[in-house]
Amino acid sequence: MAIAISQMDRYIGTSVLQATAVVFLAFLGIMSLFAVLEELREESPAYSFGEMLWFVWMTTPRRLYEVLPYVVFLGALIGLGSLASHSEMVIFRTAGVSPGRIFLGVAWPAALVFLFGLVIGEWVAPQGEERAKTFKAIALSGANGESDIVKVSRGYWYREGSMIMRVAELGESGGLLKIQQYWYGEHQQLVRTVKAERAEYITGSDPYWRLLDVVETRMEDDQLTTRALEEQRWEGQVDPRVLSIRVLVAPRQLSVNDLYRQIAYMDREGLSAEVYRLAYWTKIFQPLSVLGLALLALGFVLGPLREVGMGVRLSVGIFAGLGFKYLQDLFAPMSMVYDLPPVLAVLLPIVVCWVIGAWGLSRVR
Image 1 (cartoon, rainbow, N blue to C red):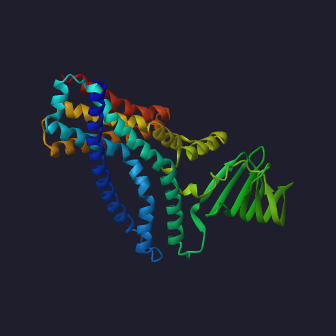
Image 2: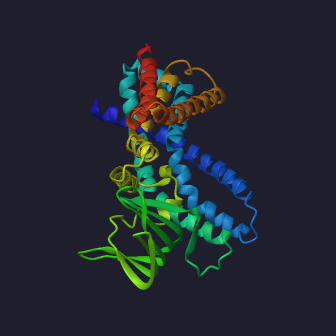
């Protein structure tokens, strides 16, 4: 009996996995086309068509990772629907196989796809996104291919204690360029400014930032004192991974590790990290999203979509997937407006998905 059930799991899972692969390729083609059309809107003679295609290629893993739950959902819907169309689901039910047992056959390919997505989302996509944003920023600035300077639009602002710093440009190798620091006293009065052409992070047992080509101005006793220095030591606590090309990458495009670092820094400085927390918990709970949508697909196939055509299943699948995404997009801003914990804002749409899926299976006879 155990061998028969194992064979059933493999049979159901293989059908779901094959359908998921087809959906995956379809999403890849559609998203690539729309990405190319979006990049064509860039009006810059320095941004060639070949560079645009390279940018789309490097950002493709991130796009695929973002739609992974919906790919699994449609793949499960199509794969199970194909089995239902050939009356194989009826045979399983007639043989006494419970809906929960059938779900185990759907869960293993969903888990396999998630593990594949985990590798993409945590290692491939973040690195590709950083390189793509750097590449595009250099191309749009008209720099040649040997330059590694990335201009940050309107600069990047960073705060640490009583110091506020603006970075105008980033080096692809990790350095900071054109830095301005503003130091404030106990009563929030400006007491010191520092301008440096660049900064380098020095590692070791006592790591620090080395500011080069420095102009320092001090405000003391209503007097201004200015001096020029070749270099100056800055005991900044900031991790160089926070002050790097990653500032060009949106929170939802960062890895879990980078999100954790960013949240830790913002909490330490008393800054709002809600957007990063939402992205962090979304990634943490993505396995539940994938399995919840797979459960919902099974509930549809064993219930109201058991005897309909493939076109109807696809239509329902698309609308259900959009509904799940709209719930996620609704609760995200609500968490910031109504002070809802980010973890709860992420979990609520997932819980709704699981409840509907479980309710659908409970009605199957």
